[in-house]
Amino acid sequence: MKKLLFLLLIFITLSGYGQQQDILDAPYKYLGVIKLNDTSFISYKLAFEEKDGLIQGYSITDAGGPHETKSNIKGSYDSKEKLLVLNEYDIVYTKSPITELDFCLVNFQGRLRALKKGKPFSGNFKGVYPDGKPCLDGQIIMSPLAKVEKRAEKADKLIQKSKKFSQKIKDNVSARTTLDTLSMSVVKKDENLNVFAKTRQVTISIYDAGKVDNDRINLYIDGKLLLKDYAIAKDKKEIPITINDAQVIVKVEAINEGTSAPNTVKVEINDGQRLISTRTSLKTGDHASLTLLKQ
Image (cartoon, rainbow, N blue to C red):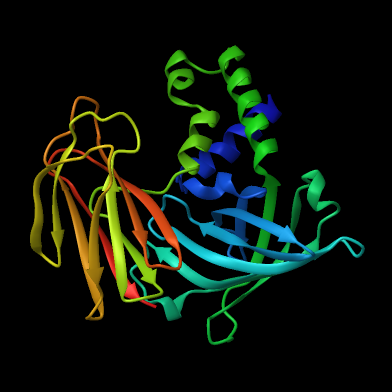
């Protein structure tokens, strides 16, 4: 029973931070938490590849939360010394309203017994601002995504078999569903995603990545209505944007919820150097925004 409660605590904690889709594209995928020195916990995801001892990839902090942030990472792995080095160095996007210069970047160095065997790892990290000045320190606790998924399935089975939980709780608590939620980036009602573009020329693509169900939207660029009562289709609608000013605000407003609620729109931002994907999830009349900033 203690083991069941422990598993429930982990997944309920993670579900509080909720939702990035391309984590599944990287060879090495980890899911866990950052523990700050004030004992608070923040969900943390890592996805990277390793070649000749060098690491490239990204991290996602506070996924689905009010400060969800994706950062690029680089580092190294020394298989002889069992030493893993990971450093965040570039903000890709964030839901946080603060400026990029305010971000505390994670710098980690610790032991990992066998990278290719999917071993968990943990250890202390140093936080630094982009200018190199120190900020918050803490601890990273990470497990391979595949192992977390197995634990989620086991937790679900234990929950369903247990007589300690009501049927209502069993129907509403699913560790597996929580993990599925953690695998995608979603911009919900009244949320804003700040996207740092590498170039001033950006292309936004909107489309339905699932079953086309007649979701309709209004799309605004800096307050001007660009697409009115637009039906989201399977084919991508590409919109070129030039970031001439400090920022460009793209707002998606849901007109309906189609035949399958909620209204969902896949949004891709391509600046010629990288592709950033997200999706909106809205009820009728709700809106969500993306703010494009030149990095």
